[in-house]
Image (cartoon, rainbow, N blue to C red; front, side, top):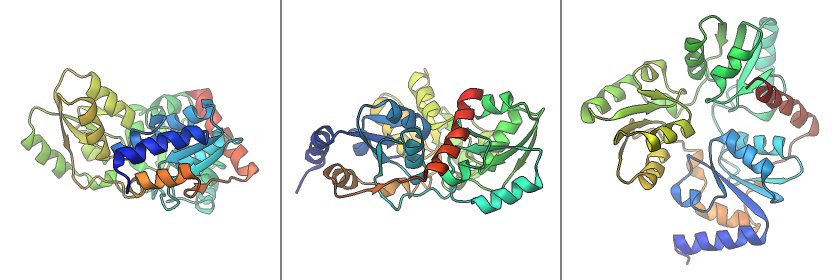
Length: 305
């Protein structure tokens, strides 16, 4: 039997021996973050993977994130730590449905949140992340925007670009949708001196009550740099634990104890251990045509952002 520390040490040894770069999304547990080469948001991780010298990349996250890594690093072997780790929001739309929406709205530019499948990206005009969405949509020549799949993130973008016309699909993140304005009222009452930091995937009733709205990385940066010492965190609850380790002199409270992404929690340290041993994970294989078309959507994001 291995202790957590012993397993971590063995992972560190094996990843070096087998030339593996480990990426850990910020919603992973802290024991996994400790053995990762890079941690953060999904798109940032894929950029780090593209620059990494290792020939194999292990994504501790969900499927669309591993696909994005493969899109940007086609010559590398890309592994997903747990093959069952999907993203309900990324899977809410398929190519058939989006094709029909495009046919109904031919004069609209299709803006896809990065939290989409590689297949869906092939028929979108541009990708955005939660931190880049406003800037990129502002830079699109067209004033008509079809934003998919998260209508909450889309509505938040629309508020900041009222001069443009938006259409949405009724999609979103089930994890962030668990937080309600009632949770805000309760948290404010219990922690009156705390700043409320929320992700734009939250309901508009929640975001309009926030002191700060931003990506996971943005929320963590705000808490680190702020002179305030108490924070209510309105995103996946792993972030609380990470911030507690990084800022032990500050206090962090969950907006809701139910804000847990069960897909992210599927990956365990043992999964990572098995992957670096060569007996676990799923290799991500993308059709060349799908990869190239999806890459075009991502490259347009870089051009506009």
